[in-house]
Amino acid sequence: QVQLVESGGGLVQAGGSLRLSCAVSGLTFRTYAMGWFRQTPGKEREFVATINRSGGSTYYADSVKGRFTISRDNAKNTVYLQMSGVKPEDTAVYYCAADRNGAGRTTTQDYESWGQGTQVTVSS
Image: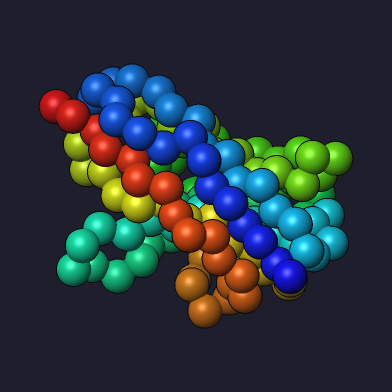
């Protein structure tokens, strides 16, 4: 059974930092690309960042480029999202997802498995 479990969300002040983690089980983690997406009420889930299977390639949404960093530890089956310089508009539920393609893609349809999400709230 595939499981993706996010953690690390919470309340943070604007300009602060937060690190999200996503622990993965039930699949061969090192062969999957991993992505982070986010969603606010009434809006579609949007791409945040992706990392390929080896961790050697990353890609970010323009809205987070230079502030967020995605990384992975294939020995721990975990992907991370380091969030720095957060803004109120970063407030959302953050989801991690797994893509068997391995290359790192940016649309929700590319990802087969999803976590339940973790809430991030940025206060101004």
